[in-house]
Length: 244
Ligand code: SF4
Image 1 (spheres, rainbow, N blue to C red):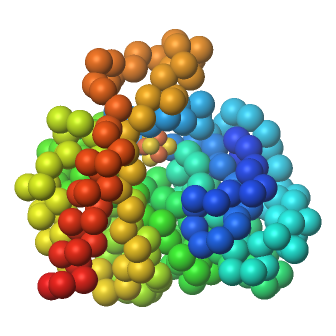
Image 2: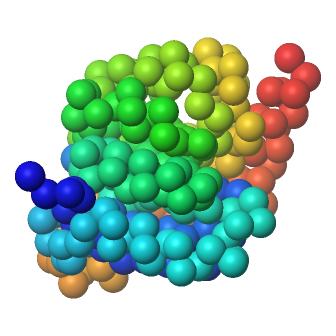
């Protein structure tokens, strides 16, 4: 039996500033079972492509940046979908915690192997939870998959009481309206431990990757999301959260 799990990563960003608190080493993992309309990383979809590494090799890289990340930063496992390589992710989380490093997963809550999920959440300090949609019909339209796995994930998340940052991409014509924000607010009431809510404006920076990979881009013609309008919706949501 191998001492450390092996898995596939896409890349490593050593000075991440937007994927969790303070400065983070961000591990972009390979593989995702969803096909979100607005995904800007289609090059991470395939689990088996790119570099095969051991959990120890990855955490050794993280440790090298210790002096940057120890002031309230840490490591963030992102993707793709980090849960899609559950055993490998768990091993990296364990090794990171053993080294005293703050751990975060940026996840859509899907693609996991159930037998590892409790331990994954046990070794995760913060979950960046990507909300795709809040009803089955829209979820299917946006991701191409049923919401069942996500729903099971959030039940586990509530049970483990991990700290949560909510994230949602706002796309013109899909969810950029106050009616949706009110529904989202109601939906988020089920969580007791949300620390932050971020609405992310839809952009088209990944479109060239689709061309290179010869994958049809399904939001062709949809304009990028107005940053100010997105901020207003985010403020509205945060205001309601604080005052209700
Ligand atoms: S979950 Fe993330 S990586 Fe997967 S398709 Fe959606 S946006 Fe892309």
